Amino acid sequence: MNVSRRMFVGTIGLGAAALAGARAMAQPAAKAGAGGPVSISSANGLRATARALEVLKGGGDPLDACVEGVRIVEDDPADNSVGLGGLPNEEGVVELDASVMHGPTHRSGAVAALRNIRNPVLVAREVARRTDHVLLVGEGALRFARRVGFKEEELLTEAARKAWLKWRSELSRDDDWLAEDEFDLGGTDRGEHAGRGEEGIGRARRLAGLGVEFTTGTIHCSSLTAGGDLSGCTSTSGLSWKLPGRVGDSPIIGAGLYCDNGVGSAGATGRGEAVMQVCGARTIVARMEAGDSPTEACLAMLKMIVDRTRVKRLRNAAGRPDFNVTAYALRKDGAHGSASIWSGGQYSVSDAAGDRHEASAYLFEKAG
Ligand code: GLY
Image 1 (cartoon, rainbow, N blue to C red):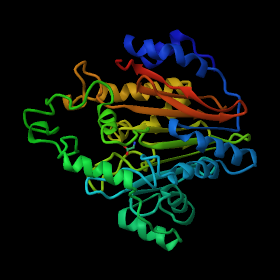
Image 2: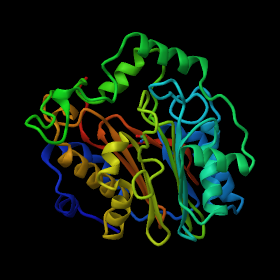
Image 3: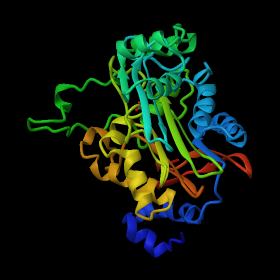
Image 4: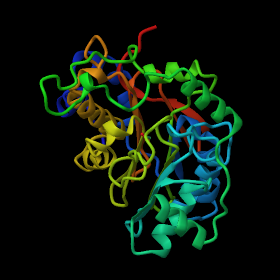
């Protein structure tokens, strides 16, 4: 599938600023893919794609490949975006979200607001495997996990607890409750309050000040077998300091994850509220089905987010989103791509050429 620059611009209608970033990196991804096996992931998932590729090379199922890879990162207490060591909600409790989608059967499973189980992605796979349901939440998800043999444990590490305590002790304004003058619906104000963050990803920078490393906030992984079967999974501890019970995009099929075995697999990391409101991953797969390259499809979904970020509190002085989202796409022919709202992103790839990070395309250049 060769997409000329003219067609690329016309297809997704990017503005000049967006095009400046997207143009250079979109073209390589427009080439036909080299087939499987291949696995892609968010930047924090290089160990995940390496493991997934091993499973694929051994003739394993594409969903097992994704899950075996992602569980490595869930098990790592040093990654504060997922599983053990994930940053907690505003009450200091770690609540995890995850989903899986199996291309060959078009079956999916997910858990949301799951406490005390370090590998939500494994529980999500069991939901798909053992039940007629797609999504279990909260107490019901925990009871299901117990019944099928998962071990409960404290997921809050010392580093995450210290970061949470510091946030609490500073009575941070960076929480998810809106002040009356920020209410988004109704009234006269409609979110006219200025953005809280600095340009780009203000929350990420503020997290760094709390002594915890900000990663990509979530892990997504998509895999393709040599025979052309696809699967994907997404796992997260969600937004740090979120309201208890808050569910992000990661466990929502069509938002943080979507896979169509005839087309491709896609996922997203970053601000889940934005991804959910444009049905992010489903949008990416639909764009690929309509002829976009993986990178073009990711950029088009991000452009939808930018165009629909209308409340001022979520925009910087230039009117651009004061948050980041990164999207990932793997097409059935093995072509893959990724894009972020803001520059500087990367994604992980493992294939015949080895394990590596590749640059994500982007819409806007981050200042400095
Ligand atoms: N994208 C992860 C979340 O918002 O929870």
